[in-house]
View 1 (cartoon, rainbow, N blue to C red):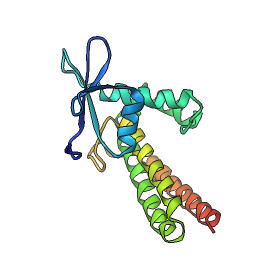
View 2 (tube, rainbow, N blue to C red; view 1 turned 120 degrees about the vertical axis):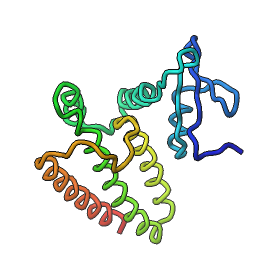
View 3 (cartoon, one colour; view 1 turned 45 degrees about the horizontal axis):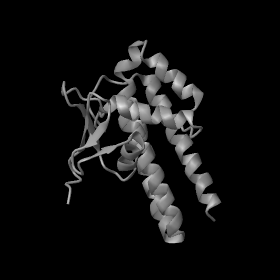
Length: 180
């Protein structure tokens, strides 16, 4: 059985085909998305150069889902991400995103625990959603670990974080009312 604690190594051949080194077969982007949804980390490397291509492929998966109408990211968030690449904010964006998603996952986990006692089948859907969010976070932060030290966030970001916490609490409240 494969060691699921270490990333699944996918090699990209010169033909651009992706090769799963554990099962010795070719895989698609959708297969890779499935591994991630199943809570498996992946690492994609170029066979010839050894370059790590994981970020590039994870972003491609996100872009394909967005283009198919499976939108998770509001236009305003996409716009802000583009802006962050052209401003001084690039140093703080990954840490901010990581903290935001960590808070979201924590509150979502608490909510799932409550839902499991009421409706176990609904909890499985929520867990799948959490796996998708984790994949998105890894793509957006470039694998920056949660709580990684970085530049000190500006005070305005702390205010933004408080706003996000409030929004998450509001969402949690609305979801609780829906499950009643």
